[in-house]
Image (cartoon, rainbow, N blue to C red):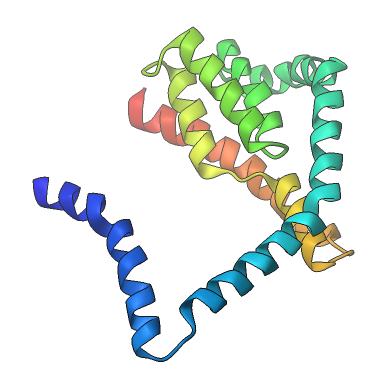
Length: 179
């Protein structure tokens, strides 16, 4: 275990030294390549900025308007209908926020873990859900927008379906594994 910790500790510094040395030995203009890559990265950042701002403003409006709370209350009977513990409805805000914003979902997950504890059913489901789903709307907005993909209808459907499956799987896995 100690060996793995040492390898992990030195892996990135080794790569940061090793890659430029190999590039130099292969006669690649290292500094010029770095500057060109940084320039392209900056252009990409500027290109995706409007998409990112639009998405962040939309999320803030969604949360601040109370729509997240309304949606959470609306979905509670669905959990009860399937015979799940009514306390599991506390996970709904995280399940709704996760496809929208990674940082927003992390904030919700942190609140759930602080409120219920990391070893509680809610804490475990929140942690599992964080690791098993993706920020679907962020991916569509930023990544698809940056490369100019306009028709993302099927990607949206599949992404949201994957998020729902991730929620169901997270609940099932935690219930099967721990309870």
